[in-house]
Length: 233
Image (cartoon, rainbow, N blue to C red; front, side, top):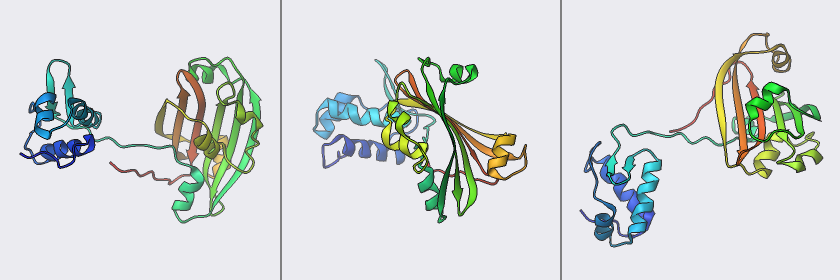
């Protein structure tokens, strides 16, 4: 077998991926160790290590300290999720986006929200509610809490023209977070804004982002009945 022409970690990753895909190395097979691969490809061992780490992160390899590297028996295909800017999401559907701020006030979140946020949450938050529309019809009702200790600039934002969703995506870098998708029954408040019946089945996203251990924002996004989410793998 000949190695890749370019001795970059990306080229080595591509060659290893090819060998896995063509079953040169079948699921469960032990692959050559890093030094042997480095000798084959004519590169530094660190370059091979970087390529194998990438494939391990992608779920194609299983790496164990002192036990070598195997092709995963059950490769995991990972879907990458980004935080969308709702205005752009609506425009991508060929519809005209609209936005209306419904509420903006500072305060301390209720106790159950503080427990959900975790971390250091003793400060003041900004509570923002907004409605995003598509061609004039309700699309998403958004209920958000922003931690002013972490993003103090938010206190100066009226969020009457640019949404908190778009402003935070552009402004507040985060290290990690959690996201949950569910079908929920529309509350009276959500139903009023989405112009649907209370109790109607709606698609709901709950998301929290953090900077280290400090929560940045906790948001619920309630989509109009009939909304369908699609992603790629």
